[in-house]
Structure formats: C-alpha cells, structure tokens
Length: 322
Ligand SMILES: Cc1cc2nc3c(=O)[nH]c(=O)nc-3n(C[C@H](O)[C@H](O)[C@H](O)COP(=O)(O)OP(=O)(O)OC[C@H]3O[C@@H](n4cnc5c(N)ncnc54)[C@H](O)[C@@H]3O)c2cc1C
Image (cartoon, rainbow, N blue to C red):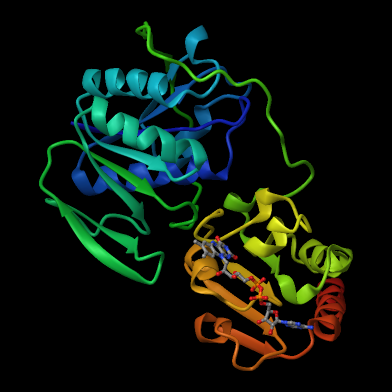
C-alpha cells in the first residue's frame, strides 16, 4: 500500500502548491504507516529531487510526448497505471485548475472515491475521514469513506508549508498512452508580473464601491506593499474594470489566503463563497450594515478613498522601520 501524490508543474516549474501537496501526502502516509510517492507528468526543467524536503520517498517521472501538455483524460490514464503498479489506495491532488480536472477523471479510471474540497489533513485514516467545505463555504462536514481507493482533492493553502532536508531519487516511469481523445492547447493567455491568485498568501480585492477602473491604483499600491495578489468582485470583471482572471467567488476563483482585504465589496453570498475560507478577512466599506462585516475578522467603516491610501502609507512606514 502507498500514497501517491500529483506533483503538478507549470511549464516545467514546480510551485508552492506542488510542495504543499507533497507534504500533505507524506503526512497522510505517516498516519497510514506507509510511504508517499510523487508523480510528475510531462517535461520539467528543474529537478523534482526537492520533493525529499517534504517527506516523499521517491518520485516517478512520466515524460511521454503524448503527455507534453495537460490533458485530464490522458493524465488520469497515466496516473491510474502508476497507482495500480504502486498499489496506491490513497491519492492526493491539490485543487488547482488542472487538479480539479484530473481528480474526477482519475476517480473513474482508478475506481476511487473522490473526497473533494477537503480543507485540512485527514482526521482519521481507518476509515479515511476528512473535513470538507460545503454549501459554498458556509459550513463543513466530516466525511468517512468506506471505499478501498480514495482521492483527496484538497483546497490549496490548507496546511502550512514546512521544509525539511534531503533529496529523493527521481525514477523515470514508462507509460504507453492509449488512443483517447485529447485536448489540444492552441494558445495560452497568461497573467504576467503578478502573484497568481490561487497561491497568493495575501489578497487585496476591490468591488463596485471603487466606482471605476481608474481608481485601482490604490488597490495595486496596497497590494504591492503587502506583496499581495489582486482580486475583484464579479460585477467589476463583468464591466471590464478588471480582467476575469481576478474574479473571485462562486462563479470565479475560490481562494484561501492568510489575509483577504475586501474594499468596497458588499459581501454577497456568491462573493463570500470564494473567499470565506481565508484565514483573516478585513472589510473596508462605507456602509456599516454591509453584509461583509458579518464575515470579516476586522471591519473598517468609512470611505475607501480616504482609508486605503492612509493604510498603504502606514504600512510603508511600518516596513521601513522594521
Ligand atoms: C449565480 C450568481 C453567481 C454570482 N457569482 C459571483 C461571484 O463569483 N463573485 C462575486 O463577487 N459576485 C457574484 N455574483 C454577484 C453577487 O450577487 C453581487 O452582486 C456582487 O458580488 C456585488 O459586487 P460588489 O460587492 O462589488 O458590488 P455592490 O453590491 O454594488 O457593492 C458595492 C459596495 O461598495 C460599498 N461602497 C460604495 N462606495 C464606497 C466607498 N467610497 N468606500 C467604501 N465602500 C464603498 C457599498 O456600501 C457596497 O457595499 C453572483 C450572482 C449570481 C446571481
């Protein structure tokens, strides 16, 4: 028996999400008294040996031409093959865009239960029991699986990253893909020069209360001093004030940063669905009755146009003095 983990790479590079998944897997394997093995699919341009710092016992690398770009079906096929070869009953996947596509396809191919939206390490391994976010983040449930094979799809930023030492062997694994329908990537639009939202530890977000796109400079300045990503509410991206890649909520990206600052956002349930898992929420709103204040840890009632520049100035002074 073993635990297998998907070590996702982005154009050959590993990111914080990858190592969080590795650590999640090794901690789960410890609880099960077994080993955790990493799986890398596609070409990489850095070594996966670092997986040893997060407790994996080895890494299997499948580098087949047919797997050069992400394709949920083919990746699931390769993964299921390795899961069978390594007698893996538990598979760990981080809930990134690709992870969310891979997990259901793999659950079919590996005949595994899919435990999705998991927000922390398993609370028990016999039977496998996890805590999941439900009702758009408004509640949690504890789910126990009685299946032999299980996939845990966890929400990124669910566990703090701890780095140990050591390196692991990276072994090449072969896999001849069957002729399944593939996804052909024709072009990729990339958000450049910013902290990607799903992995941002701090996020500064603006809503319709900011009146227009010309007022986003203050959001960006606050984000810069906090080394944060920027986000927005749905109407803001619908009106093209900001790109859709920044839209968070039920129909946008779900995030779980350590700090979420909501400026001029009312706090509608659909918005909260994507941000309420944030560890600390600060709401800035001129309306003391705005629903966001019920979800926030800290609230500032007042005009964002006065508060945000002052907050940025104070943070700059604080950083300069420390
Ligand atoms: C099916 C469905 C899915 C949806 N999905 C999403 C989603 O994923 N994400 C999402 O965000 N929304 C989503 N919505 C829309 C959601 O219901 C709200 O309409 C939206 O979140 C409101 O955006 P907002 O808070 O920016 O704007 P508003 O509701 O207009 O709120 C603006 C806020 O700014 C405050 N304000 C005004 N001036 C100032 C000032 N000077 N200083 C400080 N505060 C000020 C106001 O008091 C107000 O609270 C969805 C809706 C539906 C029906």
